[in-house]
Image 1 (cartoon, rainbow, N blue to C red):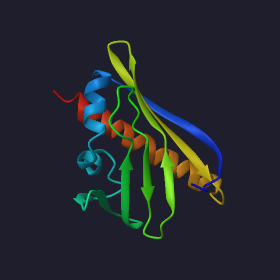
Image 2 (cartoon, one colour):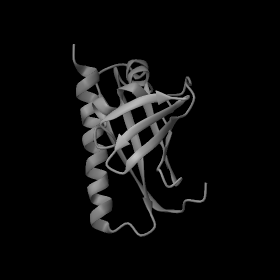
Image 3 (cartoon, rainbow, N blue to C red):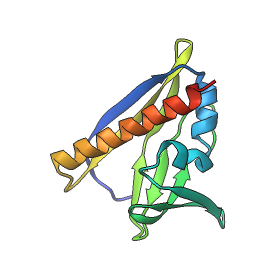
Amino acid sequence: MDTVTLGSRHLSTHIDRSAQDVYDYASDPSHLPEWAPGLGSSIDLIDGKWIMESPMGRIVVTFAPRNEFGVLDHDVTLASGKTFYNPMRVTTDGAGCEIVFSLRRQAGVSDEDFERDAHAVLSDLVRLKRKVERP
């Protein structure tokens, strides 16, 4: 991957569910539209790839293989072929867990756009929290 970043911001939230419960839910790409609607409104498994209809057009989302470490890293590939790597982790935090998304600033992204992206990511993490904490 040839993407150069200009720093990262680590966005997180505490979730009152076990790390395993959150990992199991968040690692299933079919749940993405439920907690990350800004990324896309629908997702389908087509020819072994998770395809989303997004505001950026049709994208491919590829998660890291299932693992015991809570790694939810994923690539988002645009129709142009450009791929963005998105580091994400869920770790145990007391009786619950913490989910952390590392927002990587790309070249040419203004301060305002980076702030907007950070707000959108944090909103998604809070939406995920609400989704998995429901009884």
